[in-house]
Structure formats: structure tokens, C-alpha cells
Amino acid sequence: MTGKRLWSWLAVVLGGLYFLLPLVGMFDFSLRMQRDGYSFEAYRIVLTDAQFQQTFGYSVGLALLTIVLGILIVVPTAYFVRLRFPGLRPIVEFITLLPLVIPPIVIVFGYIRIYNTSSILPLTGSWWGTNILLLFGYATLSLPYMYRSVDTGLRTIDIASLTEAAQSLGAGWSRILAIVILPNVFVSVLSGAFLTFAIVIGEYVFAALLNVNSFGPYMVWMGGNRAYEPSALAVVAFIITWACMGLIQLFTRFSKFSTVRR
Amino acid sequence: MTTSAASLPAVLRPRQVLNWFGVAPFFLFATLFLILPTLNIVIGAFRNAEGQATLENLGKLFSPSIRAAFWISIELSLLTAVLGCLFGFFIAAAITLGDLPRLLRNAILTFSGVASNFAGVPLAFAFIATLGRLGFVTLLLRHWFGINLYGSGFNIVSFLGLALTYLYFQIPLMVLIITPALEGLRREWREAAESLGASGFQYWRMVALPVLWPSLLGTLALLFANAFGAVATAIALTGSSLSIAPIVLFAQIRGDVLNDPHLGYAIAFAMIVLTAIANGIYILLRMRAERWVK
Image (cartoon, rainbow over all chains, first blue to last red; front, side, top):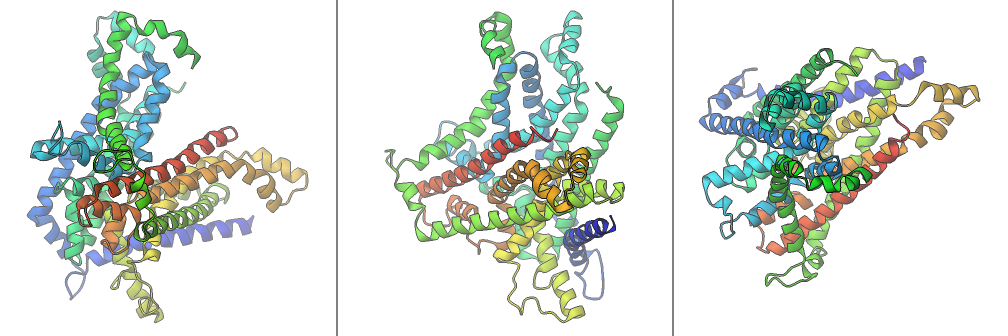
């Protein structure tokens, strides 16, 4: 038994070294901007940089819109598929998994070919069009995570009874979805939402190829032109990822206590 | 499947027609932003500039530079998938079977959730800050142990550096996927094997691994696809000095390279085929694995 424990500790310690050293290195490097010792100078420069504020604000806004769009698309679909079209289920599940199969760079390549300025729907030609395209692109990327978390949430509630109860009280479809179904799967929706946020906030390939100046391209530009600021940005990005995953854990744990087990 | 066939007439009833409006936005969205763009690429790969059907584009994939790029990509994805599976398995085995404190197990699983999503540009920065020319570990090795990492030929902007960086999201993904499978190994199986006189090695070779192998191979395929599609990490780490397939495609789309959109289509098509095969293997083996691990 002691041998087994020893090996386990060894695996964990070696793994811990590999995973913690880059984090330590990144943090250490971000503090070394001034020669005479550790300081938060790199953070000060990054956080007060107008470019940072603008691109970061843009990406946060876009991430929030992506979440709203994702909810609007996924919740009704998952609900109707469960309630009325069980036969469609394999098809819908297959489609929602496609963004994991097709590399994102290929999807955005398709966008550029289909929605370029000489096409029927020239989205890339205007500022608004490009932003809409990027928004829908991010909704596509988040589809697998969003759909799976919402569908898992729907599994735990009795949507048929809830729907009948709401209908007998005279509620229409939009009302049922907004007031009855959504609150019941809210925790699942949130975990999909935080994952979406973590993915969208630093996304690079879509934004760069659609020529949108969001946080991802800003980080890459910084990486090519500055020494210490990129590490500060990496620390910020890591904290955001950590916060999103932490909130997911928190909410799922919370939901375990609040929903009745079947 | 039988239920959908039986309820087919019901689909045409007026109420059911109304229900279609509930799923129509999804299909419209998926068609416009997922299926049509992909189809456009696939069809484009088989057409020339005049719109005639051709295999010429795919033939260009075998030009030395493109073939080399795909080869490096495949090697990189395969290497990080195999090592990711191996190390991920050790860590998952340690936290599930190794009598470690429960708190540590939960902490590692949470961290794996974070690390598997900490890919892209920031991850590349973290590795440059750690193993770059002035990185934390580089300096540490020089000052404490007198080892000159860069003198020995190491460079973070290289195949090895990229592989080391990719492992940072590959290993945690393996841990996340394989931990439930390891937890599904029932204690009774081990006890039964031991009561029949099996050694620890024999138990693993004849009971545990045969049950686990679909999960292991499936995850290997998933990790391969995961590494193959990663572009941002590679671009942020190497600029475009290392020609892997996605970076070549990126440059092609940007128009940095000789402008031949149809070669771009062909590269994109080949990437879809490779990741689709890998994911197909994953899904098939996953279904197999679920027979045992409940």
C-alpha cells in the first residue's frame, strides 16, 4: 500500500511542478518590469492603456451578447426537441457537436468566402455586418457547450408536466419558455454561459481573420511588441478563466442542494 | 428511431407545424453559420477557378512545403496526444486509486477544468515567460544549477517548445475524461482477480486495461483532434516561423502567401478530414466504452 501511495504522490508532485511552474513564471515575469525589484508596473501600463480598455470592453460586450444569442437559440431548440421532436434528437446533437469536429479556422474561412463583399449577403463589407458575423461565429463555437449544459438541465426537470400545467393556466409558448422553463434550467444555462465567456474573451482566430480588433488580436500584438506586458495580460486572462470555472463549480454545487433528486 | 417513424403523420398536424417554429431558428442558424460555410470549403476543394470539378487542388497538397506542414502537424498532434494520454492517465490513476486525500483529488479536477480551457494566446505567453530566453525556469536553471538551456540547443519557438506548451491543455483534458472511467472500475473486479491469485500487474493487463482501452484510444483520438485544430497558441508562440498546417492555412487566408484560394480550400478540407476521422474514432470507441463503464 505504501508503495502505491508513494508513486501516486510522485505523479501528483511532478504534475504539479509542470502545471505550476508556467503560472509562477508568468506571474514572476509580469512583476519584473522595473529593474530595481518587483513591481506592478506592467499591470499599471496595461490597465491604463486605452487600447486595452477598448478591446477588452469590446470582447466582454461581445461575450455577453454571444451568451444571450446562445440562450435564445439553444433553450427553445433543446426544449422542443425533448418535448415534441424526439426523433430529431440525433440530428440536433450531431449538429451541435460539429463545431468540435470542424476546426474553427475552417469555419471562419467559410464565412470569409460566403459573406464577402461580392456575395448576396456581404456581411464582411460593413462594420455592423462584421460584428454580427463574429457574434454568430462565437455562438457557433459555444454551441456544443451551451447545448449540452441546457440539455442536461432539461433532463432533471419534468418538462411535459410543467408545460401542461402552464398551458392549462393559459400561457403561450414564449411565456412558458421564459417564465417556466428558463428559470428551471437557469443553473445549467449559467454553466454553459461561463464556459462561453471563457472561450470568447480571448479568442484570436475568428477575430484576426475577420479583421476585428478585439482582446485576442490585441494580446498577440502586445506579444510581438512588448516584453513584460504580455505576461500581465496572461495573468489577467488566467484569472478570468479561473473565475469562470470557479463560478461553474459554485453554481453546480448550489444546484445539487436545490433540485430534488429523482 | 421507431417512435419517429410511428409519429410521422402527427408531424403534419397543425399543432405540430406550429412547433416547428420552435426549432426553425436553430436549423436556420446552423445552416447559415456552420453547414453552408463548411460545405462551401468542401466543394471549393474540388473545383478550379472556373468552377469545374477537379482533383488538382488536392494534388497540390502533396507539394513538398504543404506536405511538410501537414506532417509536422500530425507529428505534433500525435506526440502531444500520446504523451497527454500517458501523463494524464498517471495523474488520474494517482487521484482515483492512489489513496490520496479527497481534497487533493477535487483540487486537481478543478484545476484540470481551468487548465484545459487555458489555451490560446495567454498560454503561449505563460510558456515564453517560463522557458523563453529570459524565462523563469531558464534563469533558475542557469543560476542554481549552472545549466544553460539555450546553450544546449533548446528553444521555446520550436517543435519541442510547442509540444511542451500543448501538453498544458492536453494532459488536463485526459485527466477530466479518464477519471470517470477509472472510477467506473469496480472494486469487485479487483477483488475477484485477487481471489483467483492474480498479481497487480496481471489485474491491469487482463482486467482493467481491456475494459479501459476503448476509453484510452478514444481519448487519444480526441486529443489528436484537439491539438490539430489549435492555431492561436501556435501563432502566439512561434509567430509564423514554424509551418504547421493551421498556420499555413491562416497565412493563406490572410493572403500573405501566394494567392491561391483553392489551395486554401484543399488545406482546409484536409484538416476537416483528419479531425473528422479522429473524432469519429473517439465517438465510436466512446460508445463501446460505455458498455462497461456505467
